[in-house]
Image 1: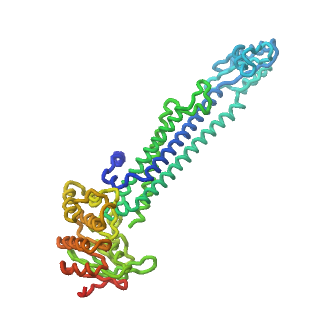
Image 2 (image 1 turned 135 degrees about the vertical axis):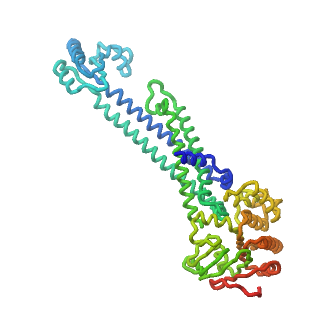
Image 3 (image 1 turned 180 degrees about the vertical axis):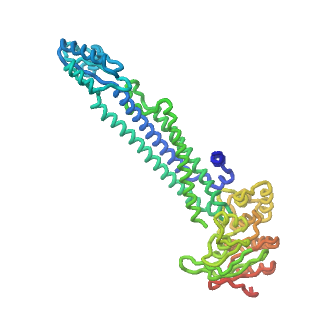
Length: 301
Length: 225
């Protein structure tokens, strides 16, 4: 392990004289930095997308899976009796953490988007709604269904499963899609850095030939190029990640009603997640350049 | 120093050298001559393992060149100074930096090599253009810079492939004089050239021998040269 760290340290410190042999400028510099920056930017976006969809799926799963609703649609007289029966059943149901009857004011707020604030609930056949929050272990929904059918036949038990499942499914698919996109971006990054490295090495064919002629070992020549490209890739990736995070930070906030698109920005420690993108880019640049350099060197006498 | 034993070289199905045998003893001065395309450059490249023989054995410093791995070839080239007609440099480095390159790649760059570099620059007459860049200097200066680069590691063998091909007669004489001085210091020198005037000029200053490539073979030329 110590040897690996020593090698990494030696690599990072570099050999200033060997570095001087690689021409410092040229289109390949801009090409590598730009390719790494662009790909790191896209990778940051894809990562934020995956994390956001993950959060969304978790939110939908955790918030909705533990809640269910009982709806009592009947006349006022029956509704009260049925409601009391339901509350009696819930009070004796294991696994129920809490339950509450949605009051008139809350019902008014729920209906306000469609009927306005001035709605008179006395004129509408609004059902009585009871919200149930279950304990982490949950309750036996089938048993509860049977008991409600026996003691409050007008009560309709809704676990939300019917409409929640497709949403959670969709969020999970989006999350997978995000990871696939991230994997493809990283693969594209590897291809682009490899092409940039090959292009740079081809452009420096004469430099490499001269170095071989004067007795430079393959490892010495390769390291001069590999270090230069790894650092260029790292710089490009850091620029790309910073721009990506800046773009995410500047996304308009929708406050408490933040939707999917406005909630793309990472939260808390999530801002540190993209740190691995430059590291991966550096590793890719290192491996790609080393492979390209070794291949070119093997073709020289 | 360099010994060819039954060396053949074939490229693309056609034979360039066929069972060539000769030896260059330490401290000798040889010219290699022959018509264009006869294989002079090929033979020079075989000497520093830029090409591998198709058959036979080439021994340099007593080692079989065919058995050298890539690092072995690199180490061999540190002890063999090579000067080409189209001498290549790193254009982004100064003349002095280019000349010092072999000491850098062999890990010998230091105060002593800086002293050697100054001496070398003075000796080849390039002190004034030391900080210029290769594209800024003349053909003759480039040839002398290439020679200086070939000498910076104090190699025992100097191989020069048409070193006077791109320079005028006066400059060619000057370069020849430098190579003769090196030979007098004990270096083994092999110059590939088709310039008979250069060979004749050398004959008056140093005890040299001429190898002629003809019909894929290397012959020791007669005293008529």
